[in-house]
Image (cartoon, rainbow, N blue to C red; front, side):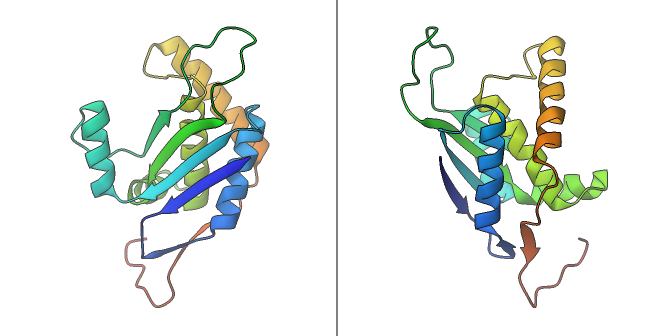
Length: 164
């Protein structure tokens, strides 16, 4: 299992080894232990541009998922690639959501990661209420399986943490 991780933020320290291990745990929990995944942590500006370009929504969002494999494969066929896809998470949005919900940023990041990976596995909460409920149940089960979530995100030493 290979995790490609890219962090495009400078005010934070991300424990990349710990985050990669969490990604591996999520992939194992969804039955994709041999898959590869790309995870990128970005800011709101870049996320807004991606959301506008790919979803035609001119606003930031918390997580985007870009599957690599075909949505439908014949039964018994092996995937055309080990790369499951790309998950992109906006850390500033994750921080706001975590604060509003009274959660740690690490738990919020784990939730967004699980959500993105499920999208890569074919779940789509936007298609209908039944599928949304199915995805929500699967998210809760996966979060239970990967708990406790390790500490992964910290501010750089010497930086003010106003409002956080």
